[in-house]
Image 1 (cartoon, rainbow, N blue to C red):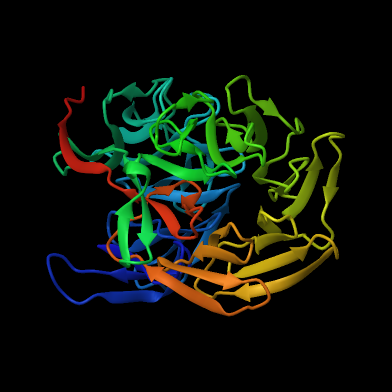
Image 2: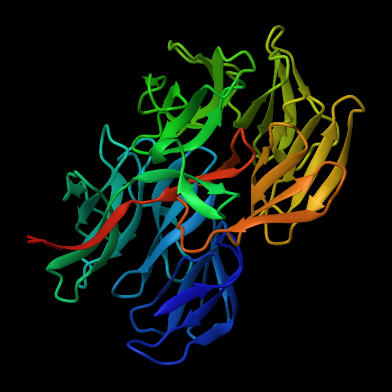
Length: 472
């Protein structure tokens, strides 16, 4: 069994062989992977992903060869039973797509497996039947945000094309992810899940994790300035909601197929800014009335934007322009009255901006596979300075209400804070066996109005199911 371990945030993991049912693990050479890896059928080779690159190496880790670089990152790798082909998933965060690809095991003839089947594509993570005649994978069914299992009949390799279309095997009510096909080819082992979360906070008095706001099933919760209202993202379909802080008066503001993230209240409590995307399109920033209505896209250009945040007077929004093939990320400010966009000087390579409640500072992170540096922009002086450095990682920075501290989570589930004017990192608490809920943009956390940390605990139910399949 191949096991990836070490590193942080799922990157630069060392690869190990773990004998089953027991035995001592041994490392596979000096290979570093991003979790996706698999054996060839004869166990002579290993295919693995590292960021946008697909690699193969001998079983002892020697002679690694890069086969392909894709736009996105590589996951869900599997060899064909005859070991001549490799199929894998290409996950592209720029346009929120997931596509299956195929390539010869020697690096020849890379191509999309199902071009035009779903446009934009939403399929990933497949497994072959032992005879190589069927390929089972997951994809979003039309009109849902849950993945189901599909089967692709016939051989669709370079020399064996087929016009057959995938057949849907599962139809909810759970979401499913692909495991494997049993050796006799008659059963699928799959995972079934029902996504649920519980909003929790760290109680500084008792030093315990306790439910917050009744433990509502929500993530990316943000409070209005007066603390009376919250906006949040629902876990079922990633839609945007607002309610009173006690959970009453719920109002849905967005609807599928638009996914939403990182809502922020305007200082006067009348509007909510957020980022939103559809599959096949980049993340964009929107504003919507807290009373409901049609969300307004603020910048219609075909660029990816994220992390909107309000100025203290509510007339401007800070946001990050996400990187593309030609440009690094940077931090920009949109004047909501004139719609003029200004790029902050020396902000190239930064993202995840957070405007302090008093309006004096903008905090931001270095754009990296695992951000470790926190920067501070003095709005009046117009200058950046490096504020803090945490080698274990920094994610979801959040200002306290008094604008004195930034609180954040690092890659080891430690929750820390750092004070303005000091680069010293102070530990708040460590999550132990609390299982934070992870979305496609990571495990969220934020500061409550009282200054404690809140996060969403994963209370989803997951089971392994064996599906009987009668292939023709």
